[in-house]
Image (cartoon, rainbow, N blue to C red; front, top):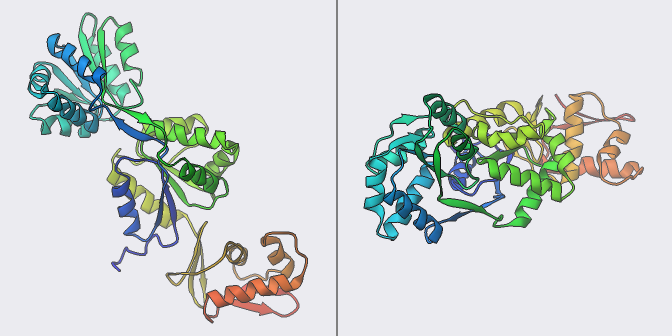
Length: 370
C-alpha cells in the first residue's frame, strides 16, 4: 500500500453522477475509501436525434454571429453527431466563421480539439458570466446559437431574447431516469440514517434529482438535517452551478476553488481525512470511529452496526466510564438485561483480537484504555 493508500480507510462515499464517475471512484478508492454508485440521472446522447440534425442544418444554412459552447462533452458530441450525418465539415466551417464563447476551460479544450479557437472564455465557468459579458456588449439584432447541457439553457436563451437577439438552442444530450432507482433509494436512506460520510454531486440536475428522490421517499427533512449537521454527512459539489439546488434547500456543500474533478477529489480527501471520524489515542493505537466503520491503528475493525454504536459511545466518553445502562441505550431495541451489554462488549473485544482497547470497571461499567 502506498503512503496515502489508507488515508480514507473506513470512509463511505456516495457518487451521484454517471459521467466520469469511474475516474472519481478510482481516485477515492486508491486512498482506501469505500465508494458506492447511485447515479440519479442517466445521460441520453442525441447522436441519432433528428431534431439535433435539423437544428444543425438550419445553423449551417443561416450561420450565427455568436456560438456559445456550454460543455466540452456536449460540443464533442455535437461534432460526432454531425460527422455521423456527413455534416462535420460544414458545421466546423460555420463555427469557424462565428465568434466562439466558451463556458470554461473544458469547453475551450473541446473547441481546440476540433481545430477551432475560442474567442472568449468564462473564467468562472458559469453561464451567468457569459450572460453578463454578452449583455454588457449588447446583443440586439445578433444571431446567437447556444449549445446546452442536458438541463437546458440556465436562462441564457431567455436573457438574450429579451435583449433583442435571435437565439437558436442546441441540446446535444439530455437527462434520462436513474439507471438504478433502487441504488438511489438506498443512497437517500443511507444519508438519512447517517450511514455514510459524504455524497459527491457533479451536475445540478443530478443534485436536484437526489433531493427529489429524498422527497419521494418521505426523507427530505432527515436528509437536509444530515447534510446540515456539522457532525453528519457532508455534501460536496464540483461547482457553484451544481451546488445551487442544494443551497435552495438550505444545504451548503463543500465546493472546491477550481471547478474541476481533480479539485473535487482533493477537497473530498482533505475533508474526509481531516474532519470526519472521532479520534482517540488508546493503548492499542489510534482509534478512529467514522459513520460506517472504525479503524484501530489503521486497521478496519469487523463490527456489526451494534458493535460500532457501542464503540462510538465509548470513544465519545474518551476514557471516562460508560455504564451498562448507557451501553444498552446504544444497542437496538429496548432491552434492560445487563447481560446484553456484556455480550456486546465481549464481541467488541473479539473484533479487536485481544488488543487492550476496552477495560471493565468493576460495578461501574466500561471505558477505553487510553
